[in-house]
Every structure is written in C-alpha cells, then in structure tokens.
Length: 537
Image (cartoon, rainbow, N blue to C red; front, side, top):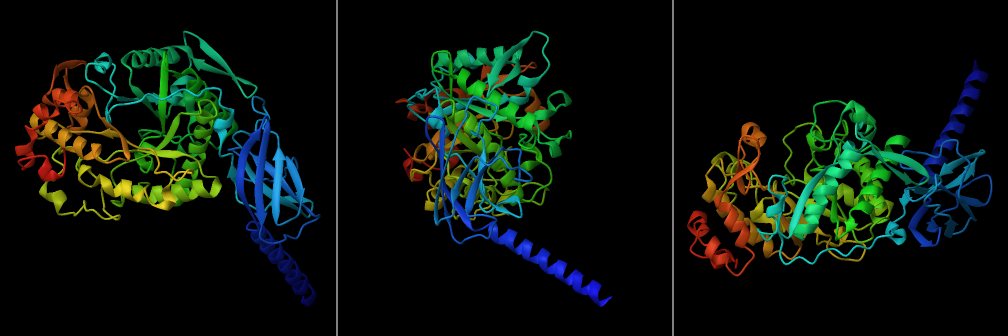
C-alpha cells in the first residue's frame, strides 16, 4: 500500500510540474509586431522574458486559423529561430492560396516532450491593407447630416442634401439557394457561389447611392435560417433573436464569410458604380440578446468572441480596400444594465474590446454609436418622462448610466483618453450611425425640434463624423409593434412614402445658410429664447 501511495505521489508531482511548466510557458514570450513586410512575406517580432525549458534551443512560430484554438498535435510550424531575448520570425503570406496566412493568429511555441506548446498569446497581422488592390478615395463631406436610406425614397437623398447614407447588408442572404443562378468567386484558392439575385439587389442600391453622391455606410448583420446556418456561430443557432454572431468556429463558415466580405468590398470600391466607405460589423453588439446573439457569455468572454469575428471582417475588408473604415457598434446604455441575460453596458464592452484588440495587435477600428433619446418613444430627450428622470440615467460623468444627445461629449471625451486612441495616436473614427426621433408621442413639431437640437449638439463636437437619422420613411411594423414613427416621411399601409413631416424641411436645411429660418421654431419647444443660450449656433 505504501509503495502505491509513493508511486501515486510521484505521478502527482510530475503532473504538477508539467502544469506549472505549461502555465509558465504561456507567459514567457510576448509578440510585439506582426506585419506584412514585403511581397509574400510576414515578419513577427517578439521578446522572451525568460528561458522556457524545452527539448531544444529553438522557438517555433505557428499560424492558427480563426477556427483553431490551439496548436494541439500540429507539427507544421511556419518559422523557427534560436532562443534569445529578442526574436524575429519571417514566414510567407501565401495570399490567394489555400495555405494563406492572412487571417492567421500567430503564436510562439517551444517543443516539450515531443509536442509543441504555446508560450505566447495570439497575435494577428495588423496591416492587412498592405496587400489591398483597391485604394478608393472616400467622399469629402460638407456636414455630418445623414439618414438611414429607404428604397421607398432613396432618390430623394440629393434633394435633401444628404451627406451620409446607411444601409443594412444581411450577409447570410448571399448564401441562400438561388433559382436564378449564382456568381462564382474564387478566394484563397477556393470557389464560392453567391446568390445572383441578392447581388443584383445590392448592385442596384449601390448604383443609386453613386448617383446621389453620398458617403455610404453598410451595417453588416447576420440572420439565422437553416439554409444558411453556416454563417452563424454554432452555439447560437436557435430562433428568436434579431441578429446573430458571425461564425468563426468552423472552417466552412469562417472561410465563406471571409470570401463574401472580400467579394463585396472589391465590388463596392468604385465611386462610379458604388463605394462603401464604412463597414459596421454587427448591430448594437453589446446587446448579445437580441442584436448579436452568440449564446450565453459574460461580457469578457463575449467580447473576446466578437473580437475574433471583427478581426476576420477587418482583414477581409482592409486587405481589399485599404481606405475603407471598419467599425464596431454600441447603443446608448453606457453603464446601465437591467439584469436581462446577455446584455452588457456599452462601457464594459468598449473597455474589454480595447484590451483584447491591443493585446492581439492594435488596428484602426472605429465606433458606430446610437445615442438615442431615452426612452426611444419620447423624442424630447432634454425633458424625459418623470419615471425615467427618477432613475437618474443621464449625467456628465464617465459613469453615466446612459448617453443621449445631451451628454454625447461623455463618450467622445472617454474615447480621447490615451488607452483608446488609434495606432497613430488619433481619436478613433466615431459616427452616430443611428438615432431616431419619434412623432407618435408628442407630434411632428416635437420630433422636428428634437432633431434640430440633437443635430446642433453633435455638429459642435469635432469627434462626431456623421449623424445618421433613422429613418427616411415611417415603418408600418415599427408603428404597430414599437409605437415609433421616426421617418422624415409618413408612410402608407404598404410602407411607401406618402407625405413629408415637419422634420423633412428642418433636416433639408439644417446644414445650410437657411438653417435659422427652419430651426428657430424649436426654441420655445425646448424652453429657451436663442440657440446661444444653449451654447449652440
């Protein structure tokens, strides 16, 4: 019995040592740079804080694809170097082949007991734009004025003086079965078939945008249905949510998403036939439930999963059009959480996302943001209903519960801190990609006044690059289900534009020399005698 216990004790000690060595190994090397450094070349630089015990005197570099979480039994390292304090690895990019490392996350490993064990965190290529074949020049806009475009009134954009137009692109639709045929696109050595009718639909929309001469923002979202389930994260494949997390967990889904995003970016990188300047990856993603459903996660785990998808889309887009912008998306609930499962305050999400991106290779991400009035149904954001005032949701501190138009500066000031700056040291690109003003509760005059006040507040903030009003035409669905009518136009029973609302002319002229003639009506509604009284022009 004593011999058995002794033997068991020895085995336990061996296991503890192995675990300690593995844990220690995971923190001994730090990758500081991973860049495309030349034709078909990637250079990775790293530093070793301590010598990791191993079978030999080498460090090895592995390239893991987005759907791979560990080296496992793999032995196909892509570069090696002798152990030293400062390390440099050089490997091939192999773009355009099935061996492409463009989307890879790189890890440094040592060989221990005949197996390769990671000794560094993952790190991605940070300059995919180095291989872009497109460098489309983004439009020079004259104001921040924008609107969510609607097929029912898309030809009115120019007449309204719209500078920024947003539109939704449902990525799953390109993989739907087609009765009219497919467009075949080869990407990284593999063919992909995209629904021809869906492509034609977006071609038409993009051509119309080109004729209207607006800067285009595409909000990339993902719906779930059985026929296109491969686009959805496996653990999220259940009905009942609005939008779904993108699939980075499976090879077919991940590679299909890479291909379709490269295809769309390439196709819409021409000012004459359609140029997307801004790609938003997901909608209000701090709301896992219901706007970016990934499954049950705490905010830390969720954000790490989202970062994988964001990087994959970022790489697909920037490696195709170097000048495109890629943005994440948050709502108005800054620190407020009401206990609903899988909903996180936007501040928690932004903090976690910033840390994740920085630790895996900082890139030039931006933020699309929705500082709606609170509640959504009440446009008069400066005078909330009593029940909401009692919750003390709005203040001018970094810990405000919510952000609405009165305290938008809280967010831009927060993002101006050194931790949150872009790789070039600038405040990141920030746009209001959706903000709505309801006319069902308060009437058209209050809707128009609320828009005028909010627009003026945003226009004086140098970090807000666009102010996109949702939407052009009232939606029968939103009116019935949400009691919200937020369009510039009333709609008929079929959702088509009927008569313009009071907000129409206010929107049209607010960024022109005639602004005062169309906005001064709002002053008594707001309760002041001049815009100067509010510190506005």
